[in-house]
Image (cartoon, chains in turn red, blue):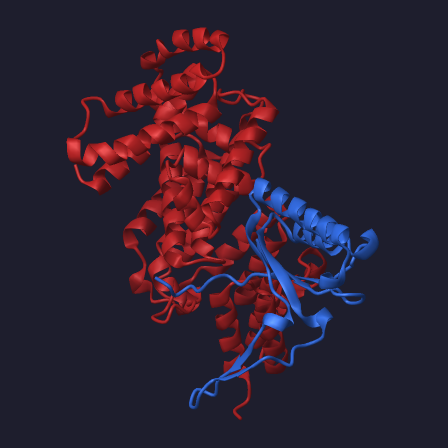
Length: 403
Length: 130
């Protein structure tokens, strides 16, 4: 088997193995470290020596052995418990359940997203600490420390390696979806960092959400989140021009959009909406689907999008949604209607570059060139995204009088 | 969010080379403790202290002739960069909190130096690297 093939297989198996070992030893922290070591051994041996008969069982056995080695160094009392526990390891429960439990644990609401994200990528995604550090452009020891703090926090919370109870379910699932969504947007928005590493994050988020969707096929919000990711991912090839500059939705070459991803996303969201429990991810996916299904920018069904943003605003109260609704309102009822919706948003989005950028765009639509230029420039000064800054400055320059 | 905290030399009083040994030690301990905490929390991306103007050079080049290299002049101490921290934190509030602690580092006689710390959001890296 090739190195790449082994890599794919190991990442697939990693959460199952961590789950199985963690459940038997009742120690996620230790299991995670032990499995990382087992994965390293496998990655270095399997490409040359070939796969063992039962790769998953092999990894569990090796990781369990490492756990025992580690624990043996502690106390004799602990050693007796471990011998008993390790003998049970091979009678593990269904692997997918363990991966799911692990995902819920890593996205525990007690963790901040900045902690939950790397922990999830490492323990569930099977990425190495070095890979995660590279994706977030921090040194490896910094990321290692962050992951270790996250695990410590979970221990302090006394979080158990068990699926959430019925009462906990909605809140816990919301945390999981939020973390997966943030991993995706981290790779998609590319607010910082080299794109090559960032797009891997989006791909990883999609892979994990696919698995979650397979485990929870009846949850419409899980399907909604997957649809949202696919419908955005479909546009990635058209989002940047030849020089890496940002291309806004209206100007994108729609021929570059990935039609398979669009079709899959549309199917998912169309199937989930009628199930009744409409949530924010489904609404966002429905909006993305309306954009993706328009053959040209002019064909966009803005009245429908405006209505969906209205629902989303009621549901979330998120001022960024209001910003997007203002854009839709401008497309339906003219720029003045959009500008009216921006009134009073400054307080809720202080010094936020997106507010200035939307205002600039609507002022430009309204023919107020000078005010548009000023707002584009303010937005450019406030964004931390280099590509976005260049885009905003280009818009301003295009409007500025010829010198 | 990544931030760069830029620290200039103390605005007033003697330069660090004229401080009492204990004051230098206390200042070092204060900065060392912050460094250690940031490393342990996984917030530290990098940090360096810089030498003073005595060891610094100014380089300019018009792209045609030979580069011009001089020993100065450099701005006054309070505008001269003494060191930086590059941190990756949850929020601007946290960046400001860390900056405030570095500003309050003790100087001569244990008095806080109250150096100005610039808190600068880091621009995202180039989008075009792929």
